[in-house]
Length: 189
Image (cartoon, rainbow, N blue to C red):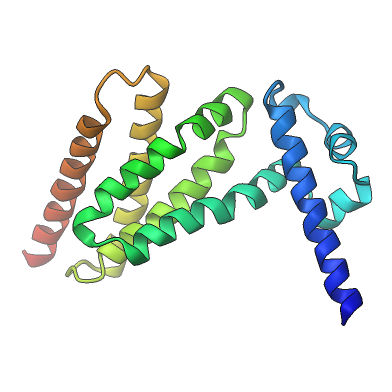
């Protein structure tokens, strides 16, 4: 039993070292320029340790960011009152602005985008529970809104943040309300 706990601790340490090393290397190089050899050398672990845990460098990033993004958005889903969710999502995007900029600059944005979209879709799923929408409408509306929120946030961030973030979130709230009302009217018709 102790050997198993020790082996699990070593495996977790290896994952942590690999993620830390990869993020350090991404500060100066694009993901496409990096190799497993560079990352394991920086992490001080073997190639076997890498391949025991991951297949690609993107897998390292997914393993690192998935629990962080999920925890943050799960907290919003489960603990923030409905009337305060918009502000909580705004704080999330503000807190992750530097991460998105790095992801875009260094070529690992698809990892972040996928994780944010998946988690936002779950947040939107929760908002739809009490609506009269069909299962298909709920599924695609949640995907539509999560992808739209991500793209608008991305565009605002990368285009110099000209508008106040509150303006962006008012726009998103308008899109959310209008599209949801249109779907609800369709169901009621």
